[in-house]
Length: 187
Image (cartoon, rainbow, N blue to C red; front, side, top):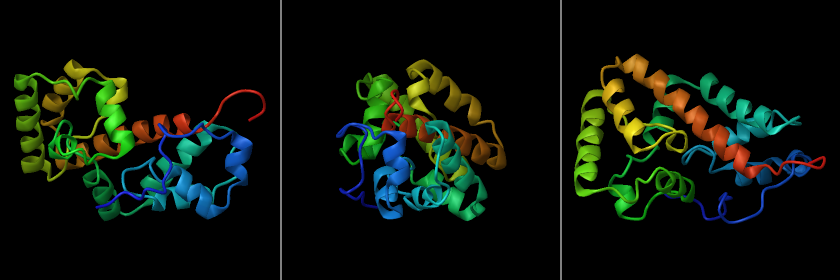
């Protein structure tokens, strides 16, 4: 999978005000929010159709609702589009800008050799049991809670894990949307 260089990265430009977001063309809205969900700009396209938005939370809800309304197969593709935490994509520098920033915010870019090996074991166990990566909103966690959550969620059924991953993805998307919207002064 490749990531379009035309998509907005929350680390490269000033956020837009809500008025400006609502005024974007559908294509520009899709491009601006394409990085909200990993390699899945179709959800930005679905959210664009829900405008105008009254606040950033409504935009985040539009992304969540678009994912929830999608087919189970599409939801599984979305979950699988997420990288393993501290996995091969991170080592190879192949994460989206959003994922790289988020993993670094939780200290996943500075793991000890033992922590890195533990992530490898957890990632492997997730793929073996669920055929999915372990998805968690790392910006709302630290290394210890990420490890604990992975161990706990390995006891989930596949259906429970799919629901848990989609819940975490909605939390990730919400924070990414908030990063892209300027606050204050009538924006």
